[in-house]
Length: 112
Image (cartoon, one colour):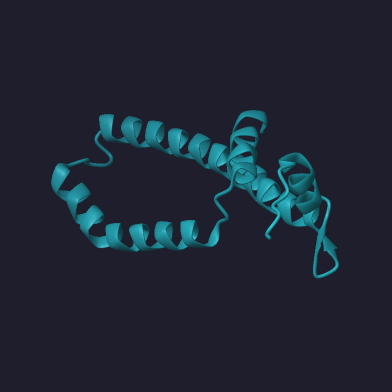
């Protein structure tokens, strides 16, 4: 006869407080959180830089020193678009998408 434990909390706590190859499980759980914090901080910094660059481009285009046209933008998208998509797919393939990572990403974006 097979007996299954019905105490889910003790089973869950046993998994969290256990170890994997001698390393505590909490160490493996904190790594995605820290990666999320770092990535959130970088995303916030890059958005600030992108907004400043966009403002500078609009000002330079207004004074006629730089021309913005739809044709040149489509050329850029067709040239660099596939490489950007491939890089994004590779990044999301490497990053651990767990709840700790998502919470770290949000906190890194808000706090930084």
